[in-house]
Length: 296
Ligand code: SF4
Image (cartoon, rainbow, N blue to C red):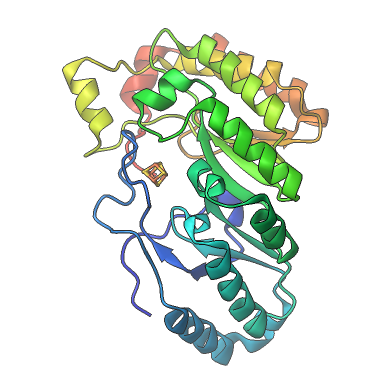
């Protein structure tokens, strides 16, 4: 199979069978992102997806027979129509008969284009645990970063997922608002997450990646990266305000300076204490000079 571009997947899918389904991103214009700059969006043909499954089955038949969860590769395979996703799922079941969870990245706009009936059909087919790029609950930040949706739209679409029975894992980006604005942003983000009730909240701290518009904005002085102590205080405020006991919070990416993870019902206090310790001991200047945050 020919595949263009780098394969990105959520850290918690490290042991999941990855199935290439799309290349690139349908939006490809968030100011902070350089992941798919040189790749045009396309769906791989059903023939090449089947060829990939057939070849893998030839070598790892017993493994494929036991699989219960698979991950569809691409920035937003959920952009595909419900019919196309259904065809892909039927193919997967042909080669992996026990699969009952099909997960993938999704953008808010991908949900918008599906009807409630289509979302329900996808839920029945096993689409679940989808990773939604929410980033922030601040519409001002979303607009500035050119995310392509507002916080209100994110809330509405996540609620549609809930109603259809599709669990979602919300990807958030502490630091998105820039210096001096993070505490307010944390409050807006917590409000949004409390309303959408995700199964998991994943925090990946905002970074300035090479070749992005945001990197240029930092150079011109139109965007100022917040010091790490502000990022940590905002993260702490965000978690304090979360009223989601059954949600798992994960902030253990290599871009997160204080790595924490746990079910909020059980670990919230411990995670807040850990953040407070980092805040108390943070030397912003030393941190800036030593912590690399320029690639995923
Ligand atoms: S952040 Fe996601 S939606 Fe935005 S350009 Fe990158 S891959 Fe596409």
